[in-house]
Image 1 (tube, rainbow, N blue to C red):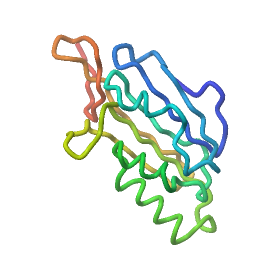
Image 2 (image 1 turned 60 degrees about the vertical axis):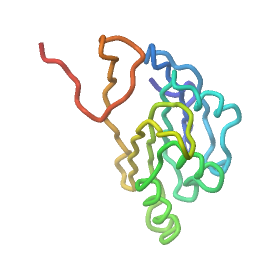
Image 3 (image 1 turned 90 degrees about the horizontal axis):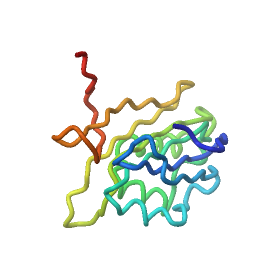
Length: 159
């Protein structure tokens, strides 16, 4: 799965059907300079547990790490240490040392709030010439069918 119209220095926000993970439900390509804006209409999908979300960057400028409302939104859906690390690098070193960064955040959609235990999310970031790579598995329900969730265990069956 990939963006329909990929572009450098951008965020790709994609929603995947948890009942059929090959189905891309909706996507947004957010230019890096819009790094403080939450894409319009995203909340409708992010509050629905029938979806899996992915936020991934493509050749993102260090100057365009998430800020403001977009940063807070990513934290609400599970961003943590990896994003904080990229923010710190941007703040301390700016773009003079590292010109590009990459970041991935993924998890199960669903309501979030102070009295709601959120589904687990996963993230990774990179500041080198090697883009971030997050390896995950789809986990079916106990009956072996959908809806699927994601997990950080290797679930490949050899037999």
